Image 1 (spheres, rainbow, N blue to C red):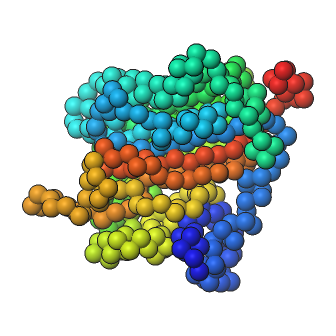
Image 2 (cartoon, helix red, strand yellow):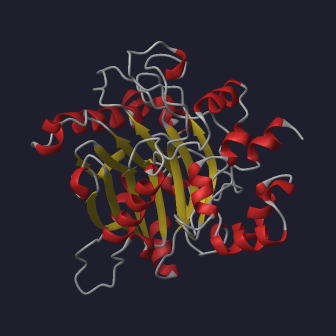
Image 3 (tube, one colour):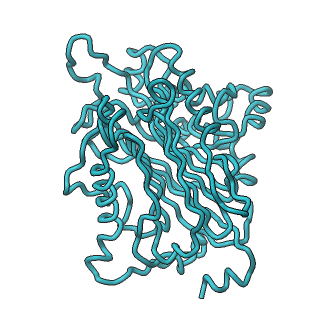
Length: 398
């Protein structure tokens, strides 16, 4: 079996629990050439059910920036893949945009940093348009099924929200903005004393045409000790339970995360690898991702039904995203550290999951930005929206 086949074996992890348990009842997971063979049984109803509406390309990204303030000249074009000019919506989640010290956790919010990140995002998304002085036209193919009428226009931030170090920012092409409504935000703190915002989530809800979207940016409990995995599971369940979107007047809008048509959950989920650190390091050095993924905590917790039932994740074929020595390609444990300081083993802490119908993932990868001890992760989707009637669709396309 080729390296890519091995890598994909445990990469497609987030399957509906019922389907997975039935498969595992008859045959051990290791017997399959690729878990993508299993996932094909559920991709059709989850990702390809026709909604008879317009389709859009959605970029999602997550990055724990380690409390480091970005420089004024930080170029985000590579991470955001702006040169392709192929996305209609950008959904970005950051963790630790400020250091998680007592002043930032208990004191007033530092808005300067979030404004700076938004400025850098806007600069990257609109750079070519600003230089050319005109909107760029992106021609799509029939196979992509993304309407070219939605590919033009400057990007604008429709909603951003910060809670301590967690920051969520959503951007769309300007000519999509009239079709987006019922924007709302819900924050859940699950950190110190169970409610402070050093850990938790910032969720943004919006409706595009008649399809409801929910974006959940998380920072779950950290730690590699026995029992820490249960804290992460509790945080995830707590976020799903406590997130609540109010308002909407007389309209029946979704209130809870899983009530929405399409959901993306991203962030520093902090799940580690359940192996002894020396063994983990050897496997990382050998780039033996398949064995590492067999022992990934998120994989094991999902397959046992303890967390994220019904969610999906793309194939993990990239290197562990944590913990790097800042400004280096080397993992932290490769360097000498101060006495008593832990040399944390690498792990896939940073993940992007999704839930709902009408979504098809087209990429899932990491990028080589080095100033943090985490690498940023990105995923691309084609998403299909519902429209109220044919006439409204016609007005939109004209």
